[in-house]
Length: 359
View (tube, rainbow, N blue to C red):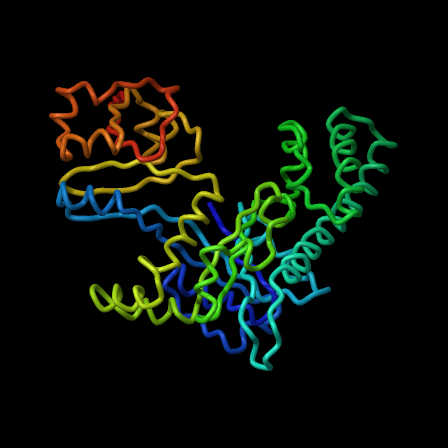
């Protein structure tokens, strides 16, 4: 799964990309490099993985991950970069919003910047819809098919909404309508996290972020989240460890780096949950979409496990912790369950898959 990182120039977007992925992309000129793009992998911190690793003491610990694509800054009225295939194929968007004075002292306008960015997404989608409707009209005149007629009807429903400035994610499309337009990878249909990049002096306002910055209407929009980070401060935090880091955060009134919440919000925005496999060799978090069947979850580990699936041994994280991480105690107390292939794996469950592949 992939997050597309987007924002107006000089919003601190590439600094956030570096924090998310551990990359070291230069930020001085990237905002003006039209068409330039960077990709990386973000690892999602999880206290449950830490606890499981402390219990099982594995040789290796692997966190859940997702991909991040960093698009060059999109200035108002410039939508060329939005057509990039790598970006269109993102599953969700992370919009970095400047909430600090710029070098010239200009006062930030988060609500205005959010509306400007959303407008660019809507207009980019409108261009695609208009072009496709023209082609469909000609196509249907030559040879009428049910699929083309259905697609045309969905696009005709979408077009006036886009013309009115409404993103597709706000339309509440039916599943069959969404399927009909899936191939277009519309930008305004993607879930979005608006992440305010705060100055240090504004961190105190983060406790009431939505109210402080007048973002109530934005927060109420469908498939939309509001978050925050201070990229400058987080860069300093990343250089510290242990008690020194904790003391630095405490001075700011924080208990953990804000980047962790951003990572968790991105993971949730992608509709992902984690299940765990544990043992002496490895403790690992596996990413699957919410609602995934046990057999398909097994396939996330290896296709052979899915193909030869017999049963899944499942215990919830909380139930395992209630018996101090002992799988045998969980079994004795009836906390360890056997589930079939159609069972929907839940977030935080520890799974062991029984399988047999005929040779």
